[in-house]
Image (cartoon, rainbow, N blue to C red):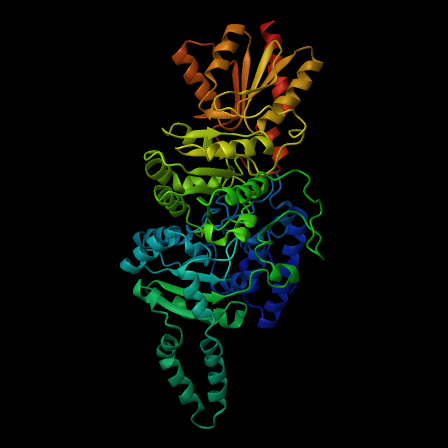
Length: 622
């Protein structure tokens, strides 16, 4: 069967198992081809191909609902549900999303992007089915990495208590973004490593069926006792204690057997958990060897895995991790905390140098923040490294555990800007708004790695929480600008003379400089100010610019409501100062996926769009 002939899941239901195996190879080849050109999630998708084929052969999507946790394993699902020809546009501006997305296809039962949500969502779908008298199956596909998040257990406890009919497939590949940690990971490892169970049933079944006369009887007897045998061999009572029927562990790449188990699970009128063991990165040698490095990738050479375009910009996260490692030699109190993203947030050097002082808590951001609070009360200097979009999951802990107690915890908040091709679930555009109004904290935004390093040294001297927000990479040209040093509440005057002023924060400093050049060509000289802190503001600057009686414009790659522009407006009203002429910020809408440059133009935040808007305003006034 040729992959190009697949238009809907029904097209694969009548295939032989040999044809399914061939289709799996084609799906993997297509995943590698697309991701090598567009970037995206590689290893997780390669590991879930047979599982996806089995799901769509056994169940009837879209009637039956398949919910993928996180969704970074959905590429085969997209290709089998009518989007094969659209895969060239994967993660491209105005193309299809890299995650399941409501509205993109009727086969995407639930929109995802963050971890540990699928069981809760599936339970909601199952209860909605029951209340309206439906009969469809609801299946949550959850990686073992997501099981390090507490939301999974809240949902399991609820579903098991109510005995709502649904299926949870535990896709156990021993990985999330990084190697899994924690008690559950160890528990699953014991279950996986029970070779006695993984091979015994298959060998005994084959043997008994060959026994003359009584072979059929022995095979049936084995079927009746296999649950007790499995319990003896792998001690699977954890999930049963939660109220789930447990099936597994099963070779997740054996589609024939996976389909049999799924068919069996369909008959149960109770919650069922099916434990599949898969290999992340399967079928691609370098992805199999280093699945954590090939979880999310930029475009690469298919043969070697080397990036097509090696990174030229310096990474904020790597720079922060290197400085933390250096500072840890000088201060034994310094510890670091991350949520399954040590390498992604730049902490690998710290982890290698001080493994006992790096706490990777798994995909459990709320726990990470409160753990940091306890470490601080215990006399240490914790540094928490998270993506901006994932800090949202720990908002209550930031308010109550950190800020209310005014604890000396430093937060390094990575990807604090539009997240490019990952799309709206990963844009880091709300952090300024949901942090700025919290008392007792300092909120900083470096324009360059040099400024980040100065801010980090400053933060580790403070007696309260400090949040430092930065994008993935340093903007071009920032390292060439002279840097005079960081002082809290004193914004940096990059170009102090002009008849108008551009007040920019973080990555928007680069766009302010580009807009300045374009305005200069049109005869308008602009000041440029790096607003490197939104809490506190530089009130002295706001008073000075108000006295100059010139228009000034605020530039920020954040939502407008609650951002830097809002803060300046509030301060000006309070102090009786001149308000900004305009705030250039993100609109009150979720921003789609695309390259960073495309999204800046899409939102009118690129230097050219800003210059045009200001010039039009100046001409209208004149």
